[in-house]
Amino acid sequence: MPEKQNPSLKDPALYETLREDGASQQKAARISNAAARKGRSAVSRKGGKSAAYDEWTVDQLRAKSKEIGLSGYSRKRKQELIDALRNS
Image 1: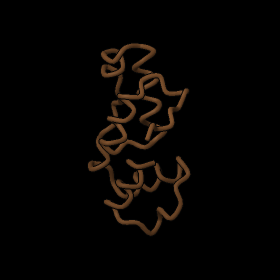
Image 2: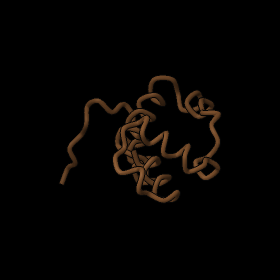
Image 3: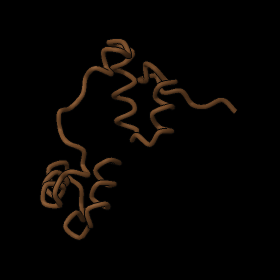
Image 4: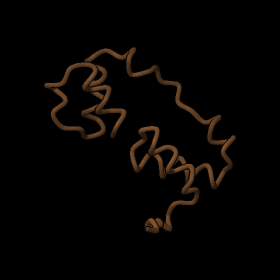
């Protein structure tokens, strides 16, 4: 059965690889389209300077959750906050 193609994806193979690795739909689409536009090596050099979520305090994780609009963050434990942030 042929899969439905998304015309807005510029690099569907990379998109599928990222989705299999656990990236959200938005993140996988953003990365695959940037890689198609600028080249994969240029995208891989781009990166944040922020520490890993595991190194953040619970207060910092809650603030980030609030900033990006997650709900229920005040009742979550540290690992639950990290999982929610990584999957948003």
